[in-house]
Length: 494
Image (cartoon, rainbow, N blue to C red; front, side, top):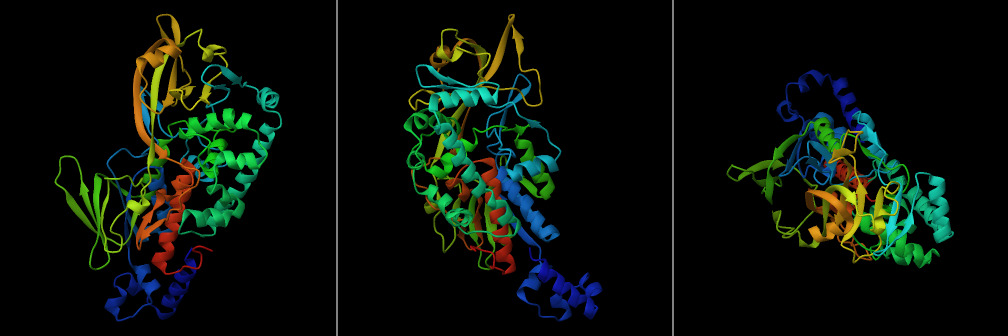
């Protein structure tokens, strides 16, 4: 991005015969007064990244790409690398419990998967059924053609209109990759989306139901298929803003995949490739010193609270949830204006056999995923899941085949609720986590810059929460930080 400045200065140094001396002496020691951008070429930028999820690790990766050896990166997290890309271990097998699917046009995740030599699993989500709280109102097929014909039969041309709308929005959104390759970056989420397309940005200002109705799509498909997709992916209704709703619908398209070794493996590889130093600890406070640098007050298990100093900038790559990180900054006394309420979801893992009389069991051998369109039903979705890196998904137990199921819900499921669905089952575990923001019918704009030198990757989640969105937010922050460090704002908010 800033190669022109580097090349010009290196050429000047060669002409003056200074290359050899620069290797052993700083510019100040040999009596040279250098421009600001040249001084920074000789400095090593020291950056902490708070959060080791896909946002934090990909931001570290992008920073390393931009700065090369001129940056020192520390990553802090009290949990495991991967964050919300989590897995659970059940009977010595691992299953995805967090973010599960990747769209085939997610360029960053596709690139990471290829660069790190990871495998793909395409087994998720097809065929699916829709349950309205009392009966199974739609079932798909292993044949895409048969599924399409059933969609046309039930929803007429609205199923095609919906796909056409998704295709239009996706085409506009994919411009982000060319823009970021050209090093354009944006200070707020709304400016980023508006730079892609003004009409696309309008989806931040209205509910999904309103946007679809405006496009002539009837309530039947909105209340059934679309509602079920929202409850499955975000645990919320079609009253969320249209941009996140369209991202959710894209997550129901064909050829979705996940990393065979576990999606969290991508974050682990990003951390390794970025050559960042991982610190297993919690950040209590961020303080700005008199010289303008930042200090972090950290706490780790079994150790006294300590401080780490000398950071020129700070990247926050975790949700700003009340009561976690405190600030001691004169020009930013509180993080409250930037905090977002997060939606809690529960992933329950059960192996068993569905009840024969239950509506979900009409075609149990063909329906892999059950989506629920009733917001009051205790279960939002249920999917048969395979263990990571395994082809044998069935285990023998008492002479019967037991599938492993993952059920999403707002609250912990009771044994009584599970008994309604399963004839026989073994309860394994339930994982409760703050999965994504609580969305409303209009997105609240959020800045990627909390104050001078303090950056916020997760601002992007106000538009939509997904693995690829986190990577896009991370790349945007890395580009912003580089522009500010080099004093070149020509590609900021353009």
